[in-house]
Length: 186
Image 1 (cartoon, rainbow, N blue to C red):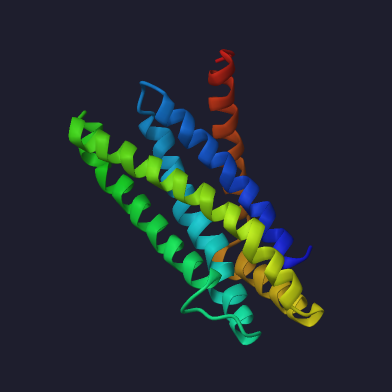
Image 2 (tube, one colour; image 1 turned 120 degrees about the vertical axis):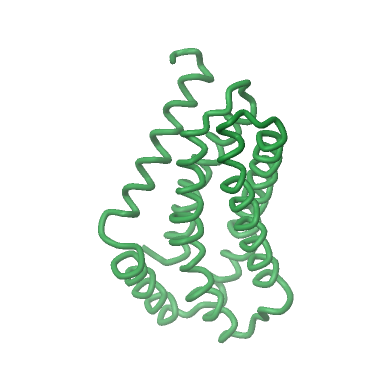
Protein backbone atom coordinates (compact mmCIF):
# COMPACT_ATOMS: atom_id res chain seq x y z
CA UNK A 1 0.00 0.00 0.00
CA UNK A 2 1.28 3.49 -0.79
CA UNK A 3 2.43 5.23 2.40
CA UNK A 4 -0.05 8.08 1.99
CA UNK A 5 -2.86 5.53 1.70
CA UNK A 6 -1.60 3.90 4.91
CA UNK A 7 -1.89 7.26 6.67
CA UNK A 8 -5.37 7.84 5.23
CA UNK A 9 -6.47 4.40 6.45
CA UNK A 10 -5.12 5.21 9.91
CA UNK A 11 -7.14 8.43 9.83
CA UNK A 12 -10.29 6.33 9.42
CA UNK A 13 -9.46 4.49 12.65
CA UNK A 14 -8.74 7.77 14.46
CA UNK A 15 -12.11 9.10 13.26
CA UNK A 16 -13.83 6.11 14.92
CA UNK A 17 -12.27 7.17 18.22
CA UNK A 18 -13.35 10.77 17.66
CA UNK A 19 -16.92 9.58 16.99
CA UNK A 20 -16.87 7.75 20.33
CA UNK A 21 -15.41 10.79 22.09
CA UNK A 22 -18.25 12.91 20.70
CA UNK A 23 -20.79 10.42 22.05
CA UNK A 24 -19.18 10.74 25.49
CA UNK A 25 -19.38 14.53 25.23
CA UNK A 26 -23.07 14.33 24.34
CA UNK A 27 -23.81 11.95 27.21
CA UNK A 28 -24.70 12.86 30.76
CA UNK A 29 -22.42 10.01 31.88
CA UNK A 30 -18.65 10.48 31.98
CA UNK A 31 -17.52 7.00 30.84
CA UNK A 32 -14.12 7.28 32.53
CA UNK A 33 -13.08 3.74 31.60
CA UNK A 34 -13.81 4.44 27.95
CA UNK A 35 -12.05 7.81 28.21
CA UNK A 36 -8.98 6.02 29.52
CA UNK A 37 -9.08 3.84 26.41
CA UNK A 38 -9.33 6.95 24.25
CA UNK A 39 -6.32 8.50 26.00
CA UNK A 40 -4.37 5.25 25.61
CA UNK A 41 -5.35 5.05 21.93
CA UNK A 42 -4.43 8.68 21.35
CA UNK A 43 -1.04 8.34 22.98
CA UNK A 44 -0.09 4.99 21.49
CA UNK A 45 -1.83 4.81 18.12
CA UNK A 46 -2.50 8.38 17.02
CA UNK A 47 0.68 9.84 18.45
CA UNK A 48 2.94 6.83 18.93
CA UNK A 49 2.28 5.19 15.58
CA UNK A 50 0.59 7.54 13.13
CA UNK A 51 2.27 10.82 14.04
CA UNK A 52 5.66 9.09 14.33
CA UNK A 53 5.35 7.99 10.70
CA UNK A 54 4.63 11.55 9.69
CA UNK A 55 7.17 13.31 11.91
CA UNK A 56 10.12 10.92 11.50
CA UNK A 57 9.63 9.94 7.88
CA UNK A 58 7.02 11.75 5.78
CA UNK A 59 7.71 15.33 6.83
CA UNK A 60 11.52 15.04 6.53
CA UNK A 61 11.13 13.44 3.08
CA UNK A 62 8.84 16.31 2.03
CA UNK A 63 11.44 18.77 3.31
CA UNK A 64 14.07 17.00 1.19
CA UNK A 65 11.79 17.65 -1.76
CA UNK A 66 11.56 21.38 -1.03
CA UNK A 67 8.77 21.88 1.49
CA UNK A 68 9.49 23.99 4.55
CA UNK A 69 9.14 22.71 8.12
CA UNK A 70 9.09 26.28 9.45
CA UNK A 71 6.04 27.46 7.51
CA UNK A 72 3.23 26.05 5.45
CA UNK A 73 1.49 22.70 5.85
CA UNK A 74 4.26 20.85 7.72
CA UNK A 75 4.62 23.59 10.32
CA UNK A 76 0.85 23.60 10.84
CA UNK A 77 0.72 19.81 11.19
CA UNK A 78 3.59 19.79 13.73
CA UNK A 79 1.92 22.53 15.74
CA UNK A 80 -1.36 20.63 15.75
CA UNK A 81 0.38 17.40 16.81
CA UNK A 82 1.80 19.30 19.80
CA UNK A 83 -1.61 20.78 20.63
CA UNK A 84 -3.19 17.32 20.50
CA UNK A 85 -0.57 16.00 22.93
CA UNK A 86 -1.35 18.91 25.26
CA UNK A 87 -5.10 18.17 25.25
CA UNK A 88 -4.54 14.45 25.86
CA UNK A 89 -2.20 15.33 28.73
CA UNK A 90 -4.88 17.57 30.24
CA UNK A 91 -7.48 14.80 29.99
CA UNK A 92 -5.12 12.27 31.56
CA UNK A 93 -4.19 14.70 34.31
CA UNK A 94 -7.83 15.20 35.26
CA UNK A 95 -8.55 11.49 35.83
CA UNK A 96 -7.69 11.27 39.55
CA UNK A 97 -9.99 14.12 40.55
CA UNK A 98 -12.66 13.20 38.00
CA UNK A 99 -12.81 9.71 39.55
CA UNK A 100 -13.62 11.49 42.84
CA UNK A 101 -16.46 13.36 41.05
CA UNK A 102 -14.63 16.70 41.23
CA UNK A 103 -16.79 19.01 39.10
CA UNK A 104 -13.90 21.25 38.02
CA UNK A 105 -11.84 18.25 36.89
CA UNK A 106 -14.79 16.82 34.95
CA UNK A 107 -15.42 20.16 33.25
CA UNK A 108 -11.74 20.49 32.41
CA UNK A 109 -11.66 16.95 31.05
CA UNK A 110 -14.71 17.52 28.85
CA UNK A 111 -13.39 20.87 27.58
CA UNK A 112 -10.04 19.32 26.69
CA UNK A 113 -11.75 16.38 25.00
CA UNK A 114 -13.98 18.70 22.96
CA UNK A 115 -10.93 20.74 21.93
CA UNK A 116 -9.05 17.58 21.00
CA UNK A 117 -11.93 16.28 18.86
CA UNK A 118 -12.28 19.62 17.03
CA UNK A 119 -8.53 19.88 16.49
CA UNK A 120 -8.12 16.35 15.16
CA UNK A 121 -11.14 16.48 12.86
CA UNK A 122 -9.82 19.69 11.28
CA UNK A 123 -6.28 18.28 11.24
CA UNK A 124 -7.34 15.14 9.40
CA UNK A 125 -9.29 17.19 6.86
CA UNK A 126 -6.18 19.33 6.18
CA UNK A 127 -3.92 16.32 5.81
CA UNK A 128 -6.33 14.38 3.61
CA UNK A 129 -7.34 17.43 1.56
CA UNK A 130 -4.09 19.40 1.28
CA UNK A 131 -0.93 17.74 2.57
CA UNK A 132 -1.48 14.23 1.25
CA UNK A 133 -2.40 15.30 -2.31
CA UNK A 134 0.70 17.54 -2.28
CA UNK A 135 2.75 14.59 -1.05
CA UNK A 136 1.48 12.36 -3.83
CA UNK A 137 2.58 14.99 -6.38
CA UNK A 138 5.97 15.72 -4.79
CA UNK A 139 7.18 12.26 -3.81
CA UNK A 140 8.79 10.02 -6.41
CA UNK A 141 8.02 6.32 -6.64
CA UNK A 142 11.42 5.73 -4.98
CA UNK A 143 10.42 8.07 -2.13
CA UNK A 144 7.13 6.21 -1.77
CA UNK A 145 8.96 2.89 -1.60
CA UNK A 146 11.37 4.21 1.05
CA UNK A 147 8.47 5.55 3.12
CA UNK A 148 6.57 2.28 2.84
CA UNK A 149 9.61 0.40 4.18
CA UNK A 150 10.06 2.96 6.96
CA UNK A 151 6.38 2.69 7.94
CA UNK A 152 6.70 -1.10 8.05
CA UNK A 153 9.76 -0.74 10.32
CA UNK A 154 7.77 1.54 12.64
CA UNK A 155 5.08 -1.12 12.89
CA UNK A 156 7.54 -3.97 13.47
CA UNK A 157 10.24 -2.37 15.59
CA UNK A 158 8.84 0.71 17.33
CA UNK A 159 5.20 -0.28 17.78
CA UNK A 160 5.53 -4.03 18.04
CA UNK A 161 3.74 -7.12 16.86
CA UNK A 162 -0.04 -6.98 17.26
CA UNK A 163 -0.18 -3.49 18.76
CA UNK A 164 -1.63 -1.85 15.64
CA UNK A 165 -4.42 -4.45 15.63
CA UNK A 166 -5.01 -3.96 19.36
CA UNK A 167 -5.80 -0.29 18.77
CA UNK A 168 -7.94 -1.03 15.72
CA UNK A 169 -9.95 -3.37 17.94
CA UNK A 170 -10.32 -0.71 20.66
CA UNK A 171 -11.56 1.80 18.09
CA UNK A 172 -14.12 -0.64 16.71
CA UNK A 173 -15.18 -1.78 20.20
CA UNK A 174 -15.85 1.81 21.30
CA UNK A 175 -17.57 2.68 18.02
CA UNK A 176 -19.84 -0.34 18.44
CA UNK A 177 -20.64 0.51 22.08
CA UNK A 178 -21.45 4.15 21.39
CA UNK A 179 -23.12 3.41 18.06
CA UNK A 180 -25.51 1.04 19.80
CA UNK A 181 -26.17 3.59 22.50
CA UNK A 182 -26.94 6.24 19.90
CA UNK A 183 -29.44 3.98 18.17
CA UNK A 184 -30.91 2.78 21.46
CA UNK A 185 -29.79 -0.83 21.06
CA UNK A 186 -27.59 -0.92 24.17
